[in-house]
Image 1: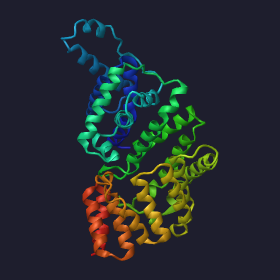
Image 2: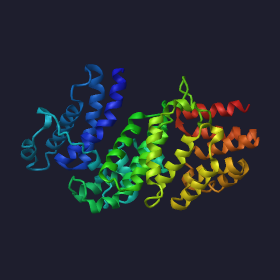
Image 3: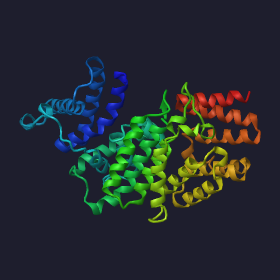
Image 4: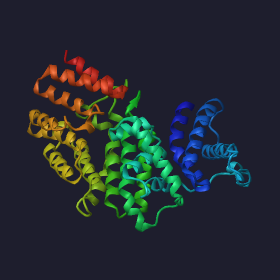
Length: 405
């Protein structure tokens, strides 16, 4: 593996562990996050020249701690800070604790003192390593709005002064919904990146799966935890077939199914089978069931679209939203014809939440192509291509438009 690739994979994985170690030791979430970002920048530069150290986590914790201490020492207006800081033990002389604080950090960011949108935004930034622009895209809001939300969330964590520990079991359930949503969004950003030259970020999908497994081990009775893990496994199982040799996107119907990861599919299907119908139904279990129907179909033509449509109808009752409606429109088109799907899509035109995403035009282009409206399909594909910041998606949508003349 090239050194640059190894560094690019390591830093996002280690960032939440470093932040967790600093917050546990020093408190002051906002200052610790700034120090971690500086340490990550230093690592990207220094490791590329000198090589990755034997203990990259220890290196990052040491550098981030020193940056934090240097910042405190420079605040001369705060009397007495020098003595306090000087007495602090730096971790540079040994390995950091083997304890992985990422899950604790995840629950801290989902503290009930924060609003639900702020919990999600802060956790995606601190644990998921997503940029403000990527988070804004996930929430379908402007980047400036999201930057303000994250800043306010940091200040709220600072003023609350909560202890850096996993909440007691009776309090975890109340934060679980947000924690699961965060992991879901991190996985989605890794599976189809919102910007840049690559379609996938395996560091994000891998970390999301790892944390979801860890969460399921801590809370095995939670059906939605099992549902989310199943959904991730069943979706990630198709990753190798989603692009061809030159990196171009291959749509689901055209993918070589022999490239799908059968072990992940088997594990995901087993999780769905054990969970669905035995606990209270939730959106992740339903999405996992939909993914299982796709993955178990021997070919695209043999996909059980009526079953998928029925599951989407239940999902829209359980967890309504424009993205669910968008996906249901595709299932409607496959069962009742593309005109029926287009009629359902039309109900989303006035939804402001769809104004910042290319997916509505992308789906409309596909359905218009199916009904034979070449001009309309071409224009929809072109609009979608202009709206996405993902280079592979831009190429794919532009190609679809060009093929229509």
